[in-house]
Length: 408
Image (cartoon, one colour):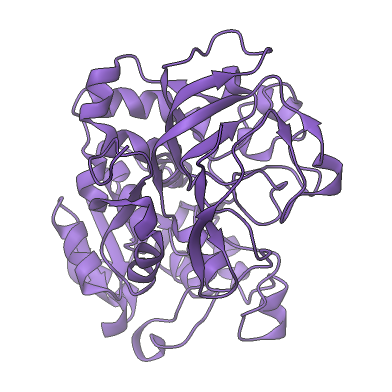
């Protein structure tokens, strides 16, 4: 079978849509593939015709040249698809199933997977615990911003939608299950958001907006979203959040104007290592800024969820320490307030089935919250540019015309 095309990283600031190999039930050598993974047989895998695949802020970190991603890497880890072929080891997934793919690749067999820590599977990435499609240092698994994609350990990894027609009606919502909705939700759960909580969400990009929507779903009384992009802040206000523009002053002062006190019950960092300062320092990159602010505005005994990405290698960092992932964090402040910190990738499988049910029952409209916009696969480079320029949208690529943007 031929005719596969995908979004390929071509160096800092450049992506292109190009012909790529059709998936096979073996992991071939290629950009970013650890030698120990080359030739890995995948009888447990399924090949998907991609229904929707999203551009993620984490992809942008690579495209900006802020990671060690190799040129030629096929991007994309937010995948929704239709099963078109299964390997001989697949028992329960069937051709024709419409499925969501967790961005975490996991085996279902190791001690971490059995403990529901699928974000740090021990068997899929020789470089480190945990893996993902189309991502730097994640084992070399081919990305899913493509017409066709392969999913290993399909019986374990794939979430089947129970009704195809109903799923297609809500596909823009359901495609968020692969990453940003569970990731935002995870940030809130680990921060301890509950009924009556006051919550500060740093960042109004798609993950921050997903976290804000999740906080409301969990019963928060007040959700305050901080950012410097007025269009994104308007998006947060559109579904019931309070907002602050961190370029206009310190977050604590603005939070006090809303709540009557400069602290919240809990905070979520949805920004990560490309953070900027606030107030007079808003134009300066300051990778520890959001973490330090979170400690400043979270009450004693509160928790801070950190789904925002932090890396061990950042060649574009402003100082040598940050290039190795070493940040100037006011840990003493957090310690003195008995804060709890929760880091790392979201274990998508821990949440995606329940969040799917919430979507199908109309309990949440996550596509509206993040302003999902469907575009053809061939327009991916423009989508990356618009996202990088601060568009208040979540771009959903439509490689095979399921969303009506291109001929199938």
